[in-house]
Image 1 (cartoon, rainbow over the protein chains, first blue to last red):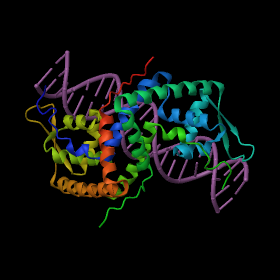
Image 2 (cartoon, chains in turn brown, yellow, green, blue):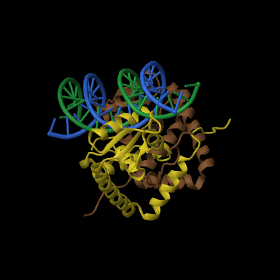
Image 3 (spheres, each protein chain N blue to C red):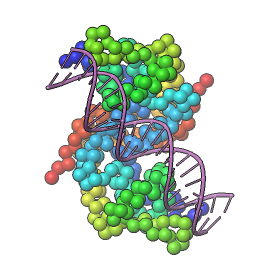
Image 4 (cartoon, chains in turn yellow, red, purple, green):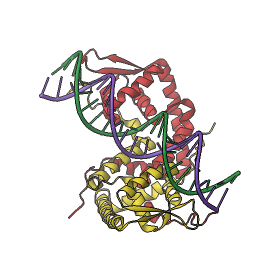
Length: 155
Length: 155
DNA sequence: TATTGTTATACTCTATAACTATA
DNA sequence: TATAGTTATAGAGTATAACAATA
């Protein structure tokens, strides 16, 4: 063991909300990668597929807005899923500017598998963090998401 | 208002821990940018400067390990801060492989300003989210960070 | 042999600008 | 005029490989 190792005072970091959010997200991303990596699915892809599953025939623009993804970026993401033949994009007959996104049969099959896998990942989280704690965390994060992004710093 | 707007079922997203972590982090990043953007300071730079402030003469490697930043990436980050004359890097006399990082007087002055600004940002958070809620969130995030990143998915 | 710092590289995410087609 | 999709691009975060110097 080298000198100067492990005696760093990290008290300051422990009190930073943003830092803790980032580190917690890092742990969750590793957990996600362990579960979904073998299926070659990233978090954003899971969100997209799941959202289409619960909203069949959703418009590309609505998808982006619901997920808070810029419309320029949703294009690439959907192109990937289309290339893997998990979704289809068709021009909307009503508004020909829009594209309607649907799951293919293969996409539907994969999404059901992903939803089941995610259920197991969340159950593992409950087992480790506590069911009450998981619910409380979700509640607090939801409240945090609704905060005004412009703080009042006084003075 | 176009048809098909705003009637997307996002229930599925609301129950995803990772998704909520990411969206909450996004809000916090906007809050941080509002406060620290004018000073041209990013979150990671604030963490680095603060950590050096509470650990004078810390080694570059210790800094990276405490912040969970790859040693290849801490190089660029410190080079930026060094160029702005906020930190210095000197070869450690004891272990000549290591570099000791210190705040310059200007770096110390700026860091004190940043710490004060951050205090006000956290007080604003307490005012909006509730003091009890902020503490509870910090506690739950800390517990989350300590989770085993390899989940047990059963079956 | 292992560790520290460094350079180079690559991928993802995110954000913006500019363009076309349609409303 | 405004909106939807697209393309191109750029910055930031993150990760790995390979190398030199030092332990």
